Length: 124
Image (cartoon, rainbow, N blue to C red; front, side):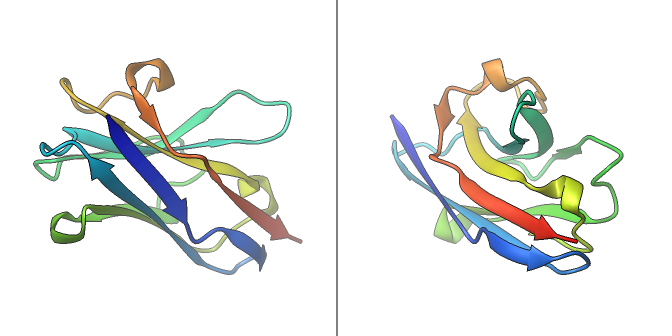
């Protein structure tokens, strides 16, 4: 089992920044990939970015390119999502997820372990 705990969400004005953190614990072997997803009310869960244990980064969604950046600190078993120039449409619950095996997946169903989510609200 892998436990994931997100933090760093909150209320921010449009144009502001936040950094989300996801701390992984549990299994002695690290997941091969950790990703960030988000889900706004009434919408499906949307892939944001994922980073592999070897550092390979896969980003998606033109809406976040150039504004969001995923990174990791392996020594702290932590993956970050740095979000800048936030927009009201970025408002959602942000989830951290982990998987073993193939990296680079954008599909939520491919991820076996999920955190509880952290709310990000961007006011206009």
